[in-house]
Image 1: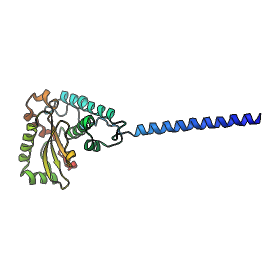
Image 2: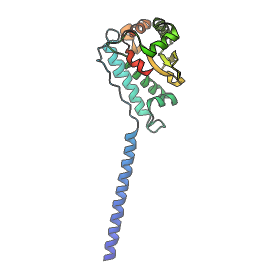
Image 3: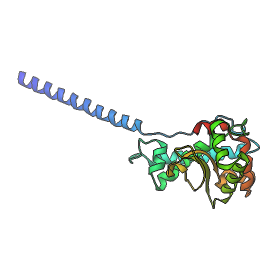
Image 4: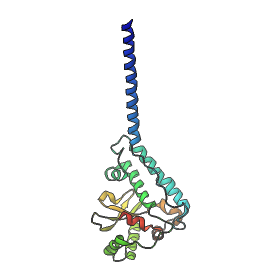
Length: 227
């Protein structure tokens, strides 16, 4: 009788141990899933109607609330189970391709884009960024002219960027589709979106007019901080 009792007790202990081990494994798996990078829509530092008339509320709500949200949702659905599951956004953009790159690139691009604006923006950059612009282009006005010309010349959809190298030297780059100068070893400072969804509701096919107006809302303090 004692032998039967101890046998049952031993089986019970083993069963409880197995259940606890299984629960621990499940917790670990859940923790790993929790640790997977989760990208979210960045909070705008301004109201959706605050950039009017340069960018309308309708364009912000569609561009930020729909287009960017879709890129973020797609990215969160694509990275689990890949080597990018726990990678930061910049690493994904640098190392990925295909659908992951397209959605990661557009997420990074739009994060920079929307956080470069302020209803109290405009004017000119200051400090070291202003010095670097003057050194490269001679004046801020010359830089703006070349930047708008480059953006207007992007064929189809894409971006025009102000970027810097490791030495702080500036250059303007034209990137197709989801391109970002980070893939060329450069640091993106300011990007203008030339996909039609960025401006068509407000400017129709007048891309150059849209680009020229954006200078009125640039938050140079944010751009300078990236430099």
